Structures are given as structure tokens and as C-alpha cells.
Length: 196
Image 1 (tube, rainbow, N blue to C red):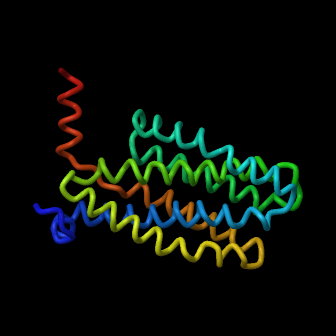
Image 2: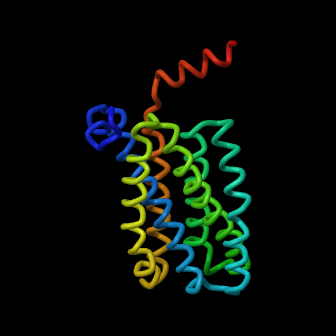
């Protein structure tokens, strides 16, 4: 192996993981920035909404890292994507009726995508062998940044379409997270280390 794209494509598990991780990076990055741009259009107090959205990032980043270490990749990604989906869905369904709860909905939505974004960075180094991890990271990052260019444009679309799109993409991210394939040799090595 030399760390090229050919090495990733040659092993089916790596190719599947690369496709899934690129999609997860796209969803995480796009939704993260969509919420940032969408905040000015959300009903209620813009200062409270922005504060709520921003304050969720530090705890989500720390907790997601700890969860990843304790619970593993799939469980952690499903948890954070579900968190974001619930926050976005609550906003779509109840945002007009319960404007005082909008900061809470944003707390869940932004915290969820922040958690998934953190895990995407951490996971690339663990699900790919070291020699191709950098290449995979670059492909995922390129896909995410290229797609995220559209987030400010989507944020300007008539509400509630941006938040509906947010919910759809986080739901798809949650489902895709279940199909990540682990390296059987690495999990066996961990079990040996735990026994000694």
C-alpha cells in the first residue's frame, strides 16, 4: 500500500467506508453551516437563538469525544444525528406555536451536528489504516467543503424548507451511520489487549 486512492478502491470495506464517511462529512458540514446562516431567519429573539446555538458547541464536542471512546463509532453517530434530527423536527413542527422553546430546539439541533462533525474528524483516523487515512480525510473534507458552499443559498430559501432539508439530511446521516464497516483485525487486536 502506498496511500493512494487506488489502495482505498482496491479493498471493498475501505471503499464503502469512504463513501459513507464522505456522505456523513457532507451532512455534518452542510447542516452545521446551514444552521449558522439560518439563525437570522428563525423566529424569536435573535440574540437568545444565537446564544443557544453557540453555547451548545463546547459540551457537544467534549461529550461526543467521550462517547466515541466509550460507546464506539456507530452508536455515537446515531445518537448525535438523532439529537440533531429531533431538534430540527421540533422546530419545524412546533416553532411557530412555541416560540419560547426555539432556543431549546436550536440547542439540540446545533449540538447534534456539532457532535457529528467532531466524530467525523475522529473516526477517519480510526476506520482507515494509517497509510490511507490521510487520503480518505482529504477526500471527505473536499466533499464536505464543496457541498457546504450551498448552505448560505439554501438558508435564504422560504422557511420552513431549509429546516425540513436539515431534518431529512440528519435522518439520512443517522441511517448511513449504521452501515460503516469496522476492520475485523483491529477489533480482534483490541480484545487481545483487553485480556492482557
